[in-house]
Image 1 (cartoon, rainbow, N blue to C red):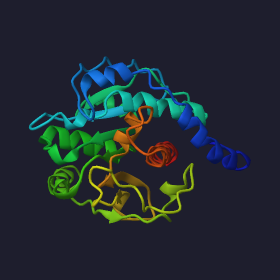
Image 2: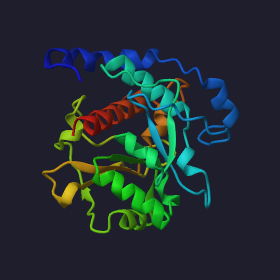
Image 3: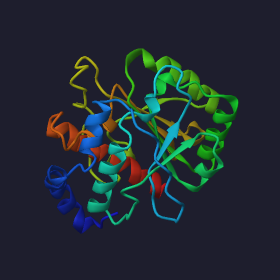
Length: 255
C-alpha cells in the first residue's frame, strides 16, 4: 500500500496506466464470445506465498455464471495490481476452487460471480462459512434485479445469522487505496435502469468490525475489467471498476 506522499501520484497515474493496459488474452476472448465462457479451466498456480486471485466455483445448474469473465478479468486485474501497488501477484495464473476445497484456506480473498445461479450444498456452505470465520474476505459481483433472492437464500445457508447492511461511501473499504467519494454512476450499459448498490456482511453483524463479504449488486466490475482493453465500455466505467476492485483487495489484505 502506498505511503501518504505517494497516494496523490497513484491516483493521478491510474487513468494513464489503465489506458496503457494491453490484453494479451484478446484472441482467446474473441473465441469465447463476449461475456461468456467456452474454454477449459486452467491449472491452479502452486501455492508459494504470493498473492493469487481466487475464483469460487459452484455447480452449473443453469449456466457457468461462476466463470463469466474468466480468465481475462483475473489477468487484467492482476496486471493493474502489480503496476500500481507493492503487491507482486501471480499475473499469468490464478485459482479456481470449490467452496469446500481445503486449499481455499491458504488464500485470504475470493471472488464469486453470478450468485443468482448459486445453490450451495451443505458441504459447500459449511466450507465457505469456516473460511469466512477464519479471516476470509469474499467479493460478490455480477448480478441484477431478481437474482438477489436466490443469492440471499444461499448466503443464509452460509451465514444463517448474517445481516446485509447497505454501505455508503464513508465506509473505509472505499478509501483503502483510492478515495471513492461517490457510489453513484456505476451502471451497465445493457441495463441502464439498474444502479449499483453495495452491501456488506460484518463480523458479528457489527458495522464497527471487519467486513466478511462485500456485495456489488446491480453491477459487474468483472465485465468492465475483462474488456478494458477492447473498447467495449466507456473508459470511466473501466477505471472505476479497477478502483473498486483494488480497494476491495487492499481492504481484504489489511483487515
